[in-house]
Image (cartoon, rainbow, N blue to C red):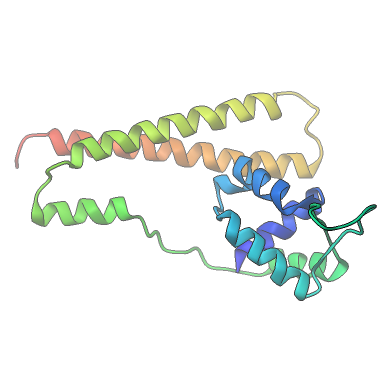
Length: 181
């Protein structure tokens, strides 16, 4: 149920066409809530049908022109209700963790290379997040708006998660290469 809420959030931040929305997803919301372009376009149709968004009127002929969407009051209300709702944390479902468990019974061939690959991916993602933080959230008193503080908290969550994975993968590699017990 969160993809429609992610789309409503993005459209409240800035009315956008489907194409612009998919690009914004790739650069921001997609870091923590991924969706394919097809899923986003399909969800836009459902949100419009539900009366949560509408296509803005265009100045000229609509054929071949991008539709730009905005959130209607019902969409804003739906998002506010969702934000206020209680929800328990979801259990982790990560194939890498399951593969490590499976390696305990079938052997570790190829596992070290995969762990190192994941380590590199997380190191690159951490560097990207730190670069975003440096560009968009410089230290100083200019970040008094709650909106900016909340966006920074989300980014800090990503930074902290990447640091966790780097530390955990480093530990897993140490355990994998350690002496047999």
